[in-house]
Length: 134
Length: 110
Image (cartoon, rainbow over all chains, first blue to last red):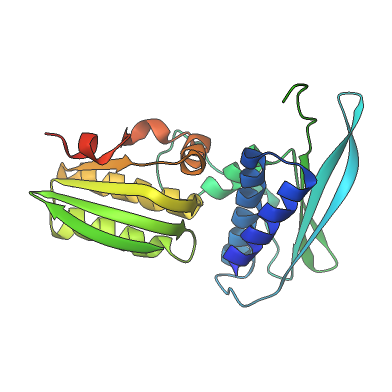
């Protein structure tokens, strides 16, 4: 299922005009977020429901309006402790804890919230205008 | 993900293809740990040329392989990284801890 979501998101990001590397960043961030939900919110149960919604939005950045891709993931798992969602020091070379770092490095906005018994993760990737002549 | 093993003198070469993600990375981890911890192979080379995608669980498996190799004094080498895989390793800021070459010839050189 993760592969299906990756393929769909990659195509969506490409359709919106993101570069190949930006498409990969979006795919990686959402894939890592889904993995974290399965591992931590659903305690390893990959059969529980995760809702993913995507839409094109307009945001203000550096005094200019820009198009962006907003992705919201919702799950009904256990409450995520925001204080624990801090990743780890990269100097600490060991497996684990990289997923959140990948998400934060890949996206422009990363917001966690808990609403009506659901964990919600909002991710935004801003679409940069192609450079003139490219 | 698929793994095919080749043996060249005292070197094991794993040709990996497909996606290394949450579902498949445990297979890679198990294969690497077996080579280092059980078989004590002096050098394990990973051909990542046909890997299309790798997530943090894949990176974690590589880190575990690297640690196991250091524990037994073996070498763990990667080659054939495409742009996407290189980007993931750079994002993890762990790219410098791995021994990475462009091709198999360099990876198996004495």
